[in-house]
Length: 328
Image (cartoon, rainbow, N blue to C red; front, side, top):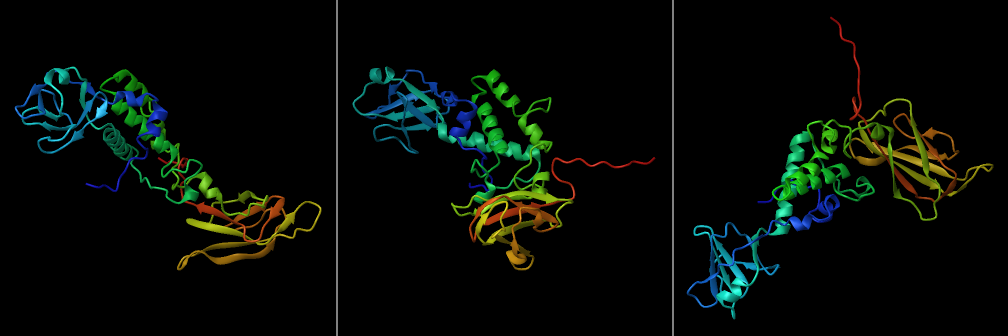
C-alpha cells in the first residue's frame, strides 16, 4: 500500500555517510548444506531453513517465484513446511551441498523499510509538521527535499536499526549521537527547536531570506544587507526586487541603476503589487517592504535582474525565548 509519508534519507549514500561499511551488515546467513532431491528432476529441497525472502547462490541473487520452481535459479520458500525449493539443471545433491547458499531479505528493500520506519519514529518524536521542500530556492545548498538535520537523523537511526542484531554496541553508539537519555543528540536538539526546519519561523526568516531568482551572469552587484527595526508587518510574503535600469554603480559617480519592489496581493497572488517604482540605487539603506530596508552593493547591475526576499513572521519565533512577570 502506498503512503504519503516517506523516508527523509536515501538508502544508499546517506547510510554510507553514517557507516561506510553498512553493506556488510546485510543480514545474510549461510544455509546448512543439506539439500536433498525432491523426486522431480532438477528440483531440490532444503528443510528447516527459517524464513527466506531472498536466496543467494555464491553471492548472486536468485529468482523468487510464488509457485513450484521450474527454471534455473528459481526458488520458493514454503512457510508451512519450512522448506526451500530450488531449481537448477545439471547439478547433483553433492554439488549443491558444495555450493554456498545464503538466505535473507532483499537488502535494498530492507534498507528502505528501516529508513521509512525511523522516519515515522522521528515524526512522532518531534511532534510537529514536517514538509517536503520541492522548490529549488527552498532546498538550500544540499538541494535535498528535506532539511539536512532530518536526513542525518533518519539515516543514522536506520543504520542503528540495521546493524543492531549483529553489533548492538555499535548500534547504540550510532543512535546515541542522534538521541540519548541526556537529551544531547541531534534529534533531541531538533525537538527542543534548537534547529529550525525550512518552513518554520525563525530570527533568520523574520529578518528576510534573500535568494537569486534571475541574475545576469555579468551582474556583480548584490543585495548586501537588510535592516528591520521591528518584526516585519506580514505573516509571509515572497517580496521581489527587480532592476529597472542597469549600469555600473561605483562610488564617486551618480548611480545609473534603478530598482523596483513588488509584494503580494492577498486576493490575486504573489508579486502582484508594485510598492517601490524606479527608485535610484544609492548604496544607503533604502525602502523595501513591511518596514524593512535594503542596501545594494557597488557593482554592475543588469536590467531585469531579480531577487526574492522571503519574510516569515510569527508572534514567537522558533528557537526564541520570552519572559513574563508572575504575580502571587
